[in-house]
Length: 258
Image (cartoon, rainbow, N blue to C red; front, top):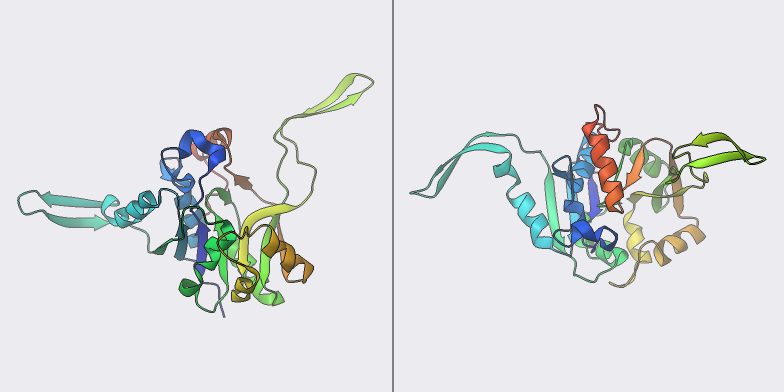
């Protein structure tokens, strides 16, 4: 048994990034001229996972058009306007297989996953959100999931604080730390591996995956954590997008593992 597919949730409204998402779905917000969705897929592909299933909703036509035209946009072409013929001279498209599924406009995260059941077969699959990147060893995550035999594995991360901190003694600042480690609590890092039995924990379209399904899995002892101490970042606000843009413009963006 192996993990060969990744689900990337791509149907929500992305309301916290409204400056960008009024015009396009959040996974299509660009970092370095490429949608963050592309960056996430490159992380998986670097770990040998090149088959993707994307549940769509809000402005889904933009995501479908992006992949429908991907090969053409990545190639050198000649267009004969008289005959409407297109000759492709050199293509550099990724060797990915992408299934795009309309899962409704108002469907919650759990409902979107449930609607993909017919496309996922009987093997475990990866699942993540369309707004976060990490320098993650997905292959090690998948191996860990297969080794313990439980239904779900979540990547646990400890994000840095968004604010600088002061060490104060008798009114004197003894140290200033810009964006120090946070409170060191583990949180949901958003990169999962799930076995097909997870569908038994999901109700209908209104099911929020992060609530009842994950809570029940935890109570039943079926949720394992795989700690990740490396780079991880979620793009929730315009400030987050700018931070990722700055990192991409650097010599070595930390999530570029390909």
